[in-house]
Image 1 (tube, rainbow, N blue to C red):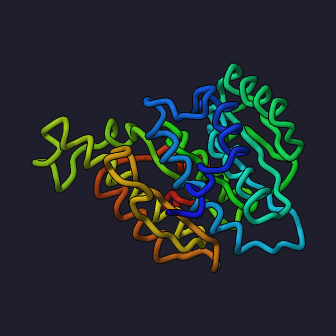
Image 2 (cartoon, rainbow, N blue to C red):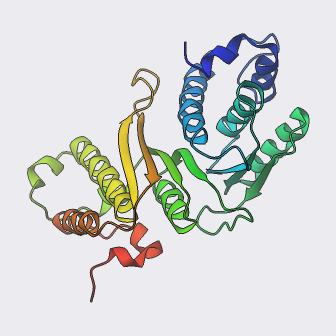
Length: 268
């Protein structure tokens, strides 16, 4: 049993799950939310590990990009308060004002004063506090890129991204050495996802992050189970930048992420 899933037996945690509407009034998890809960617990576990590397002498700040209903923020908040007490502040941002209002209502119902939620695009949001951890769970398409960029621009120590529906590069792929693969729509989509996530890892590495890529939860829970976990540990990496440009040029794409990080483009 994992650290996070152990909470399922706790009455206070069951109350939280009922409040965020992952569980019925009797405390049982909704059948159609089982996967979402497993994703949330798994990501929270990894974020908790990152938090342990941050000094307890000060409050740690986490930025939840495309936060939706705030499942991860609320669950991780519980873990940090009740399981290994430390000071934290959670910031949630999402374009959808209805979802943000839902988060604020949940926050009031749970009586939490270490959280704030904002209606905004990720890239335009300017947090008052510098985040130690920037993360996103299934931020659709280029919203994942915005989360990565925001973490880099804010010099966040940790960035964790679980991508979803990467369509941008798939749409832009042109003539390239693997043309025989991309002639089939399904294979082109998978190739596009592979290239997209590889480019993202190289962007993070070029910005000075050590990057790990792994399946954070079983594919039976969700096929979109790849996590990019990054920790800033060194200065910019010219070799990774070179690899990024080589891969981008190989597939003749101009990823939107370059609009936010113009140093990714080759020198003119």
